[in-house]
Image (tube, rainbow, N blue to C red; front, side, top):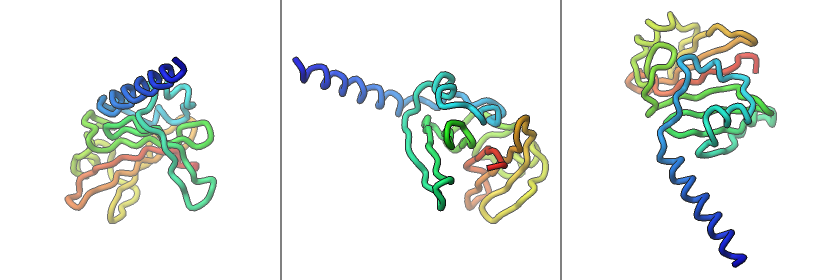
Length: 156
């Protein structure tokens, strides 16, 4: 009988992980900057448990993040006990900040105005922030389409 409980728990966790992996990403707010500053408990209360949790190591120890990956192109990056960055990427298909991930840069420019910084593989805009400066980085593919968005606190 002692093995039945751990086995049952293992089966339940595996089924939950499979269901989470196949579930679509939760709906991201039109302005993902509203998620900056959430605690882990607030993120889980709002979006449920993430389908995956992993670390992203930086060059320095203070640059290490914990990532709550919700699948479908949506992730939250946490430093210490707060969300400091939101990632929205393909295959996420709902509008964010006035355009859809996968759109041409021109579509983002029509929604956000001209970017402040243009790099070979990305564009950056300053966004209005309430408690801290906020920036948006749009990563582009070879065709010039924005395939990833990073909305982050610019004071980090």
